[in-house]
Length: 230
Ligand SMILES: *Cc1c(COP(=O)(O)O)cnc(C)c1O
Image (cartoon, rainbow, N blue to C red; front, top):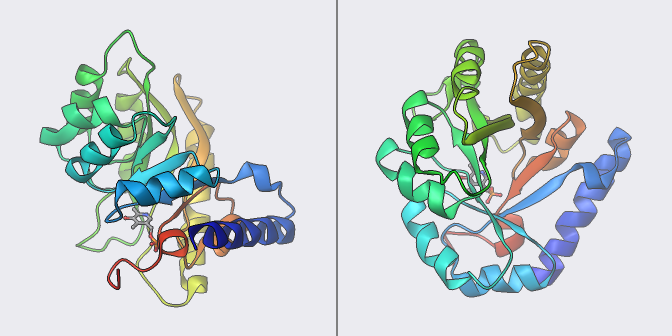
């Protein structure tokens, strides 16, 4: 079942790329495995997926340990608290949800100088909802400047999660706005900062995100099934 789901997601990505005049390889699929056990991740890995996303450091820790034999690139997609940053720096290769300087400093401290720098995205809150995490758009450039001075981190782009709506078209202005923000930061030519990754789009709206320039989609339900009806 996971295999068919992955095939369908890849077909949807290809079709959206075709409509947008883009190469399917320009979109990276991150399979969000939160709440699903390690065996499901292994199954998806056997279908060819290599990047997996988790939203809780503690939940990820067990899965990462269990799947150490596989060459998985683990992404943190959920809110990062400063007190979990040390552990996060050990188990993740990519932090998509950085939204403050304090956890960034902790990640930088914890990341061993011998290993690869940690890849990060700045999570932007474009909806300004009280329950959402992320930095307001007007503060992104300043945070990018400060994080760019931390030698063990590498900013690769931006991530956003628009306010939820059944209708994916409602998300389009947010996706467009994230792309424009990335373009404007890119023009600043900050050293150590790249804006090549735009992580936007989930199971129900990734086609719209791809049409608006997404280069990384975070897909859970469409691959692993519904989380509540497990
Ligand atoms: C859960 C989650 C996803 C995946 O959502 P689906 O709707 O299941 O595809 C993507 N991004 C973040 C930040 C998430 O927490």
